[in-house]
Image (cartoon, rainbow, N blue to C red):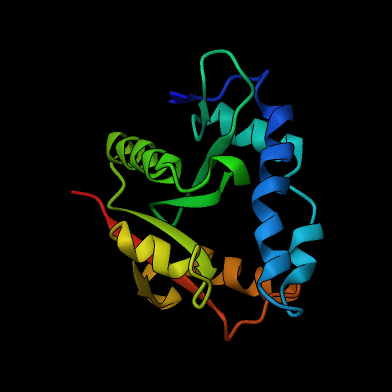
Length: 173
């Protein structure tokens, strides 16, 4: 099946929770310390709506079919921060994540951002190693700004192990 990457419409947004839940199912296989993430709540609809109004949500879909992947971003410390990248399990490993990352990079360049940033797990193959294959490298919060440091602190409060988390950056050029 052929998938297109496009900006999300308002009608797409309620469908993204299903995509995020499907993608999060991988965490159930990552061990007991991360299985709770498979049961976590997806991004709230009002958050997605706010990000979409800023032009920061893209989807992967076949024609007018329901989205099978999405990427949401927000401006943070002068960078474009990836809030969420999810591809439904059946459509993973088809290059959709990479294409969504490319859309975000293009948007970041249009906005004049120097880089894309994100927070992720260091040790999971579909997290930091995946992003490293797509040009991201680990970087400390101090190099990115206070907003990024607050993101990591909030993740710790939400139950993420700070020793397993990292920030990553991809320079846009």
